[in-house]
Image (tube, rainbow, N blue to C red; front, side, top):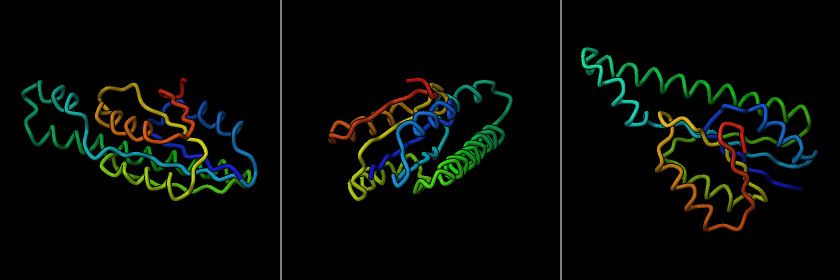
Length: 156
């Protein structure tokens, strides 16, 4: 029985990620899906919308919150789609939604569940992802001997 951990920083290119998982996972395997939801929008995005000047602080904060809310809802929709897809195939699916501040929970999950393979889908969008997240995750994988497949918006 194989245990695969899917870490989603991006939900773009999900058809390719699901196709890869379908190749990889068989009945009686387990799929752990972790959707990483950012606590805050990238500073570069904040700078971009606040540079306009006439919007004001409240409008900028409202836009940031709205973008964050959309991102969280998008994460939930995709996590549910993945769960539905693989449960139809009798695959044990466990899903979790975490914030970027909780990345240590991924480390615990890998150790607790004795994960055999990790697939990560990063985003190419500089306004969504912080380079610090990539660094935290890369540091984690440098400490483990688990095979990792990395995708950027569904492209390997």
